[in-house]
Length: 477
Image (cartoon, rainbow, N blue to C red; front, side):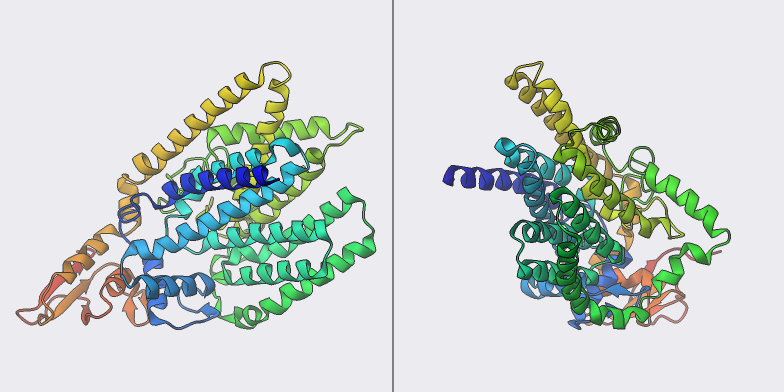
């Protein structure tokens, strides 16, 4: 028993080290710049004001900003990497959740090697470009995925032990997730689907299922009440709703095609979220995902249904439900942030596909040969994802421009100016878009220079002599 526990810790430790490299290596320079949304989060974090919802910028759930505020106060350094470090920590916590969730799934599939399969799946998640980019930027989206997977870990424990308090704890953690990101609002249906599938597999009574749901949902709702009260502050729903557009139903059909295709063909075009247009799943994961889909269709008609086959509908249902925030939005599709909750089940299905191929090959080749081949594929995957992250996304001019790198360079230049010299910033870039009475385009300057009085103007005609003058954007002719 002790050896198995040690093995679990060794595997988890290796996975976390690999993932930490992808999340934190060169975080001070990659990504470059500081995007205005990141800077606005940082300014709210600097203020020290703790809010359920921060109403500016369309309304933002407050948990991520509160965590950033905590880290800023501990570190005491004002730099973009401090804001982004929060995402990296959240990403690592999510990898841990993935490991424990997969270890329980594979315990019911192949008990002997379940920790190894959990390690493989969580490492593939950590190295995937989609996950590693979101772990390096100061956006709150990944927090929703992390809380979701840990709520499922707790629910799995509750289903196993059948103790009411475990359902209540899972409901509390799940309810806290409502303060993470708007895509998370769909998760109650994911959790109910999970409990229903577990009921079907265990062949439990409907009465016991209702008792499970009651314990979980009641605690979930109680924790979520402050958010429900504050939802009127979130104007983003109306701004991006597909129903605010002409021909909404045609747009929904278009969104279904784009969101489904983003996994395998054409992904997010925004360089802040992705290498523009690259499929969200790597070719390796995409092939095994499709392979698992084919295997499920062919095997589900058999009389003897394995746990693998019985559990697959939940993962597909999870993906469908997680796609809804994107399907009903009207801008920027495919969208890696609004679709973030699709990521973990997509990787799990790919791991299921890898397992199916493994069981096929081990009957025809030696165990050593199969493991060696799998190790080579794993190595190729890690090198390719690392190259895409550090060698392509991190060095691209698209990424440099997407993160307002020129504004951050101006912020560093302002830091070198003597405190006795007045600083004027002439704002030509979107001067009419404001955040707390300053142009949004210069929020990185405000975040990076919290103790400096910066005067923002819209032309350079009345600037006194002797002042330091900087420009954001170019004057329209």
